[in-house]
Image (cartoon, rainbow, N blue to C red; front, top):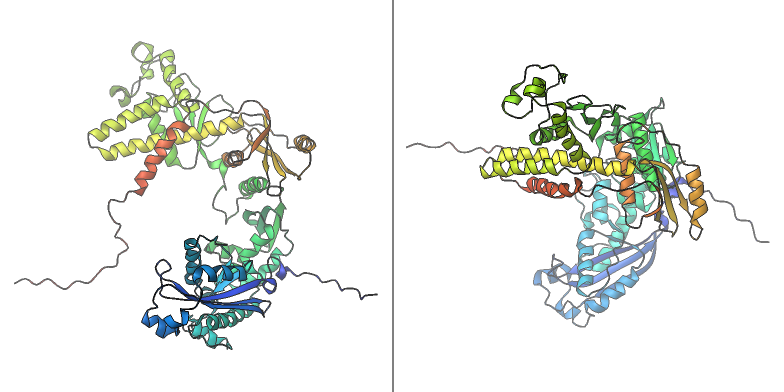
Amino acid sequence: MPPARLPVQTSFDELGSPLRETTFVVVDLETTGGSASSCEITEIGAVKVRGGEVLGEFQTLVNPGTAIPAFIAVLTGITDGMVAAAPRLGAALPAFLEFSRGAVLVAHNAPFDLGFLRTACERLELSWPAPDSIDTARLARRVLTSDEAPNCRLSTLALLFRSGTTPNHRALADARATVDVLHGLIARLGGLGVHSLEELRTFSAQVSPQQRRKRHLADALPALPGVYLFRDRQGRVLYVGKSTNLRSRVRQYFTASEQRTRMAEMVGLAERVDPVVCSTGLEAEVRELRLIAEHSPRYNRRSKRPEKALWVKLTVEAFPRLSMVRRVVDDGALYLGPFGTARAAELAVAAVHEALPLRQCTKRISPTRASPACVLAEIRRCGAPCLGPQEGESVQAYSVHAGAYRVAVLSDPGAVVAALSDRIGALAAAQRYEDAAAQRDRLHAFVRAAARLQRLTALTGVRQLVAARPTSDLGWEVAVVRSGRLAAAGTIPRGAHPAPYVDALVATAETVSLRPGPLPAATAEEVECVLRWLELPGTRLVRLEGTWASPARGAGGSRGWLDAAQDARAGVTPFTDRRNLHPVARPAREYG
């Protein structure tokens, strides 16, 4: 009876692609010069290693088809006579690609060697496999201090790690020395908690030892899509994020390069990480938005307070006006938004006032009793309904302007676009370009807001929508959307009949309570998130209760050229910004 195998518990350090199970091909090239586009390869040397053991070596001279420069021959010792009988690159390169198939390529100053190999593949019309790669020079700069190694040349590092091979500018010898340097660097990193290929690629010395010691916070996280919440000692949420692989993403906070300074501070305060496993990526994205809005974590920058968004409201009164508000109430008013900044809302309001003679005063106006008019009436920017029906506009006459605004917001902004376009053209013809640009910015703000509102309300007006997208394993991911809110999400395995799964998902979906306004069930960000998913190639509508449609002459048609104009403006730099230049001492001017 064969002896029973003892169970081996895989440690957390071995998750991912363990370094000891990764096959590396350490490669070095000798060339006729430094440019991959104009120079040729003269020698290829490579060593295949795995788990610290050499599995094989590859070495060949290459006939470059051109003379080797004298200084290159002196540097490498490779002469024209040595390569005369060597194979051409067309024979040598396929052999090397076969030798390195499926391995991670390693080189000292990898962009140089891999650049030559990639360019050679293009010339020979060979498929470049685009393998994973490690640059030992770059890795050494992250791991070693200047006291240990004054520079990161291969000869310096080979001496530091006591390589058994001295680099001599020959491909195989340099590759053997690079193997020893790679093993030396990996040994250093092992003590810092780097045990997988993913961690090796993303390692940075900027991550403090205090951060690395908190690696255990990711121990219990699953390798599944979802949302993660960093919490402090009191259980308060510090940061909310999402990932397709919770375990891998959270571990990067403790071992990988994190350029955001505030994240290092957050990790220092974190005491635990709570996962929320999701069935699909869409569900994870939506849950992230909801959790950020719920907890307002101090280290999240976006989506924290959707309730603070601004709206432009057409008030409900005899003579309606535009007002900026933060709350949407059930008063029958028309709301345009939401706006992320007060500046954007002000620009949109200014655009409407340029095109339509809506009153801009804030006082209440009686339809029967007259009151003094402001200066806007004198310059014909307002119909002066305050003067009463005898001298000013009546309720019926004024309602035409309010109706034109409703049409512009909900279905066709043509009136506003035409009025401001004429104004922009007149100002440009008079060479008042700054004034014309100001009018364009106003028009862009209004059209962008109207296009966004029309796009959002097209979905929020649908009572229920069921859609599906194919997954990478030939199954389906399904979403149930009610009034723009993701009510349920799930997956259908490959080969299964979809109807029972869809029925079950709809039956267990969230019951959505509706609020007043254009966004009755979800925030604007959530609705846009769902819309992006619905618009992805391959998404299919399964069921639809209601009508999902956008206005034929909606604001989206005008937004395209306005966005193009804004982008063109951003790309123009008429004057170079010289504020960062340091002052230069000049000799005193001599007067004679």
